[in-house]
Amino acid sequence: MFEEIKKNFGFGCMRLPMKGGRVDNKQCCQMVDYFLEQGFNYFDTAHGYLLGMSEKALKKCLVDRHPRDSFVLANKLTENYFKKEQDIKPFFEKQLKICGVDYFDFYLLHAQNSENYKKYKKCNAYEQVFELKKAGKIKHVGLSFHDTADVLDMILTEYPNVEFVQIQLNYIDYNSPAVQGKECYEVCRKHNKPVIVMEPVKGGTLVNLPDEAKSILNNLNGGSPATYAIRYTASFDGVFMTLSGMSNMEQMKDNISAMKDFKPLNEEETNAINAVCDVLNKANLIPCTACRYCIEGCPKNILIPDIFSLMNIKNLGKDWNPGFYYDSVCTRNHGKAKDCIGCGKCEHICPQHLHIRDLLKKVSKEFD
Image 1 (cartoon, rainbow, N blue to C red):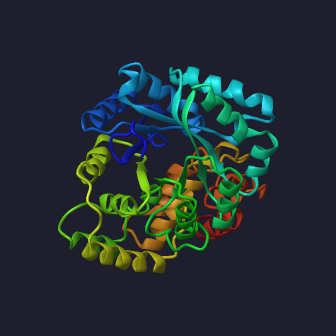
Image 2: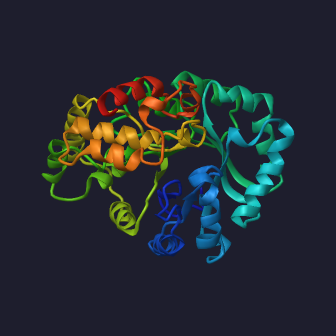
Image 3: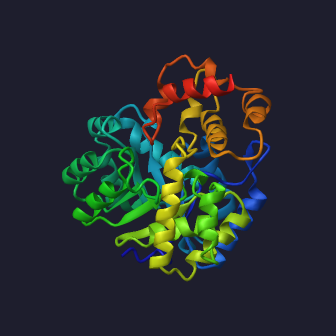
């Protein structure tokens, strides 16, 4: 399909290993080297990942240390970094410089939805990106998407020359009326667009399972919660790449163990995944993927994903004290849920379309 890609598993660089608030370059280099040694070569980043540190880390740990033809690099055009049409190409050139490359193999119109698509249209963003492809600075143009299936259908109808689509697909979101994983996947198939999957483990939600759900997978006698979730997404027809945001070598080795010699889920494993879905749906979890887009613009500096994680832990009945971590860790130097002023900046940027202001009120009743 895309000849430069060796295997159907990619290194998502939104959750790189961190140390003291910076990317742990030593561990990142080890992970990059191991990833390549195991026969994988797809790396995915964006300018805003890790507050700009992701691109820089990839230059130091990947680009400066390995031949350009040994890896495939994907980057994105994000709406925060351009206001008018004339801003797009200078921003793109800036990304090339930061990453230390002359071209991107894959370039995506980032996080498309019904609202920001208007801005991309107004600024002729799609046309600009396709001009960059003609100039040889991009090999493949696609889009990443967070909205309802009808919006995706509209975009692909208006821009049929888009080569691939990156969607959120995992076993808990597949039938979600908010994420519409199934419906978005079907739109991609309708338009004959190859699919890249993001959030296969939903920001760790499908790794840190409640005991009842974990025991269902343990009874299969092989694999981890993460590997079952990744293999679930990779089993779909038309999915040519599944991304995983790995934060340490242990996660990478676990993920690769399932994807080096990939096999689709069998009937027994599929039934187990369905049983896990039943358990999770009863737990009433906040469907946050911890992408952390919401934090940067919060005027009260509230660590929204971390707080939601503690709320989920409490709802799951975990045996450690989320209230202690709320007071002593998450809000010690940051805002509390009760400090939210209701500005809505977080909701505008949230890929999951969560009603964050309402959720923070519920969290505040629980912890404040």
